[in-house]
Amino acid sequence: MKQSVFLSSVIVITAVVAVCIYWFVLGNPSNFRNGETRTLANNLLGTVYTGGIVVPILITLTLMDLTLVFERLFSLRKANGRASITSFLKGVQGNLMAGKIDEAIKACDAQRGSAANIIRTGLERYKLVMTEKKLDAEKKLAETQRAIEEATSLETPLLERNLVALSTIASIATMFGLLGTVVGMIRAFTALAAVGGTPDAIQLSIGISEALINTALGLLAAIIGIVAYNYFVTKVDNFTYMIDEASYNVVQILHARTNE
Image (cartoon, rainbow, N blue to C red):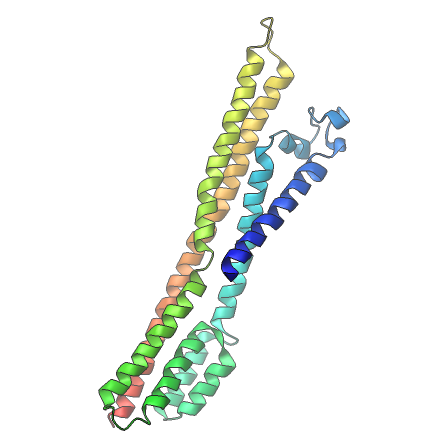
């Protein structure tokens, strides 16, 4: 629910901002030689404005890309926790090997983040099952492992959140760019087929500019989305691998201590 509300909010806000940029910044009369008519651009901003109605859509997609990139950077940084995750894991393993379960849990509380949440869940379950006299050592460790796996399954979607949105934006941005290109070429060929046999040079240049501008903006949004998606997928894969390794080491240490 929160995820859908966040994405809906991003779409609405970026769309409003994109329309404002298109109309008030790019479409400022000072960017055109003929003022309010807004056809003869005298700078790059005015040229982008002549790209037509598809331009604010492409600006919206680009702003969404940037918004989701910053959201993912913040979320993954938060998932790492307060201190270096490598130092945290070494500290937890040292406490466990010394039999200091409570100290390890306190370290998880201080660290926070996804890895700390998963390990803390496993350690709390381990403390709980150790009080069960009816369970043998293997069942106690199995319960601990199951708690870690459940916590991992809850944390992983949080790490992968919005990656599908980035991938989708990268795909549809090229489609909208192509749509704007086709519309621009239609305008250009219409100008070439003007009544009387004389091409309308102004409309021809506007049509060609519209086609190229939409192509460029579509590629820009797609490039940002693809690069960001691949970067974050790699980061999440590395992070989940580190969590799996840490969880495995924790279980092995607990197994060794249980069988002492």
